[in-house]
Length: 409
Ligand SMILES: Nc1ncnc2c1ncn2[C@@H]1O[C@H](COP(=O)(O)OP(=O)(O)OP(=O)(O)O)[C@@H](O)[C@H]1O
Ligand SMILES: O=C(CO)[C@H](O)[C@H](O)COP(=O)(O)O
Image: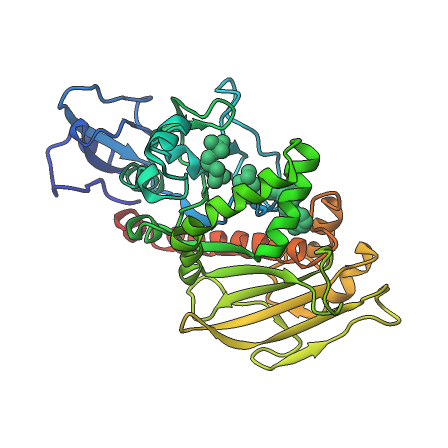
């Protein structure tokens, strides 16, 4: 069992440590203006608003933190539903909490939306003439403090940005989960937050495709006009280019979504070319490969074993560099006609971190109604979900093997 340690000053005469030799204890100070709830020892203890100091003790197992970055309307929620499904159980908003909460909790994962760290509400942004993508509209100090606290096993009171009213609502309590996913515009923008991530993903949706998806959602589902959608995309573009897009250079995996190359001059945007770009050399992540690791392969699986209507399906796999990093790229252009036949493609992929033969196909069939289930977006999101499960299991296995060291980290 781990010894009780105090993070700021060693061997403090803490009554918590004295009676809790299996916990890691931290000194807290309310002067930091971060409201912490203590956890794991005699119920919960909350700091007041004075300049009080005290201790909180965390359980040994710490939270694995995953970052998912993308612009609004680029499929983050869909990806999160696929990821939580890999771990089983439904993801739901906190019980009895704010009905407009952006948080989703399941047995294993808690997904928090980084919009909750907007420091300016809708009116405030309008008055200052900044978009939500601008770092000046977000509180990165609080984001860092709270993600760090959760990672260390400490519950926090996180603000809520209410997308219905455009206001900042009273905070909600977030308990440390096994896996915390921080999704939103800026999970990799602040270097301090970035360093807390055990794995990071960027959804890179090309402008043409983003436009098609936004029209589909905002026109069909939200009644917006075509002109207003165009205007909103244009208004966000400079800040998107300045603050959101550059984060992809830090991502461990990027899912790039482009128009198809199988239909000359396609402008419908329905058939997609999707590229999964995976960093090489990471400790808990080994890239997926097709047929032969490290080779360059082009594969058309259509024929006797895979039904394909026009324009067919084409896979590509090979090594590349991405922002000076060595990467492997798996690409799929086209779409599946019959999802049950995906097993044929799955059986030619390696390192997909499945627990049984056909698990990718099973997951895809389970969520056949999710957007992107017939193309590379759904396939690669599912595979990344399985890789995250594998990464999590590797990390906890390592911690179990060296508990004392793990508790000190
Ligand atoms: N893989 C996909 N294929 C086709 N359309 C998609 C795909 N993913 C998302 N979409 C479209 O984009 C819309 C937004 O998806 P989703 O809600 O998952 O994005 P989001 O990033 O969470 O959005 P927001 O941040 O605005 O809440 C969906 O309603 C759907 O129309
Ligand atoms: O980019 C966004 C994050 O998804 C939103 O535009 C931002 O959070 C502001 O939200 P709202 O439009 O509800 O005020």
